[in-house]
Amino acid sequence: MFFYLSFLRPPPREAAPSGTITITPQIANDLRTEPYANESDVYYTWLPVLENSPDAPVPAPKKLTTWRTTNTYKEIAVPLPEQTKVGQRWRLVLTTQKSGLDDFQQTRNIILGGEDVGSSPFAVVSMPIRIVEHGTISRSRQTQIQRNYHFLIGGELPSVPTILTIQEELSYDLDKVISSLTL
Image (tube, rainbow, N blue to C red; front, side):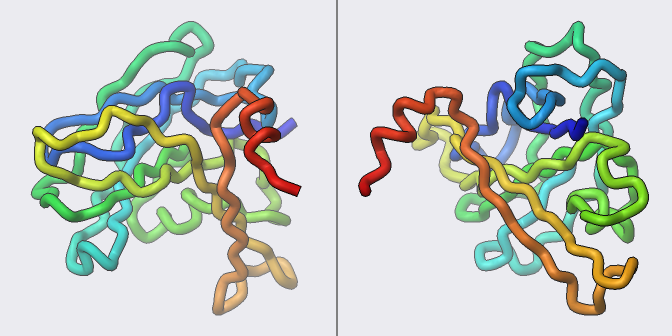
């Protein structure tokens, strides 16, 4: 069975330039009905959305917490990147694989067809979090996440990676999703 990193409490849509955001990470199966039984360290980093912050460096991944079923509902504060400015947008990345920046591209992406695919929970990328003035922050939370799947061709990553990006809804309320669809 495959397990996925996700959010019980997702990141906010907006944040002030200094401080932290709160999330509740989750590791569970695809339907989020069966929690991951093993302990697993969870690492985080921030990816800049480049049109607003082309010179922003990608911070090195840091340990956020150790996942255990006993701390399933624990809220965790995540520090924003240093020197964040109003107008920038950042994506929060959670992974269970510790890596340096050179390997981070692979740990935030799910490499399909790899020998160890599914041996650790799949990474998750938040939707962009907009940095705004402190007094104008909306308290709304994100409703989607993103996962990046790499396809292996001939057992190796191609020189130009084939990436499939999938956005997932976080809502369990399928009645709202179905009623919002028009045929």
